[in-house]
Length: 153
Image (cartoon, rainbow, N blue to C red; front, side, top):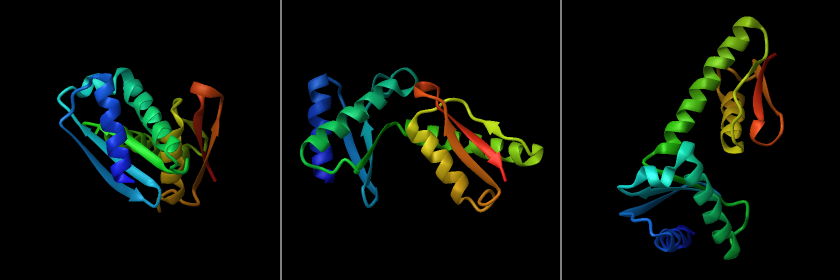
């Protein structure tokens, strides 16, 4: 699987004319692969607020799935640890907002975010010992305006 992802991504980057120095793939679960592109042009690949890397990730997934891989397979594409830093930031925000919800006994809404980061928030708060059984989360809204609501129990 790692070889298929790597070869597909290499071809994609070559066709796009984007120079890169390497691709590192780490298996992160049964069906999850973290793929890091090493390049000197990270801003070109990341794009405005991560839009380019998000689109490239989607395209990579579609190309890999088209080659017979199950659509349950998750491929996380990252450049210069951009996505990891975003994940850490979203988790810290969720922690602060969960503390606020618990202190005020009122629900707190997070800003709109994509499905990947909403899932990170739901999972983190459901599994972290400080919040498990103390808060619940739910997504609401439509499309790009979809948000997470943290509700104290």
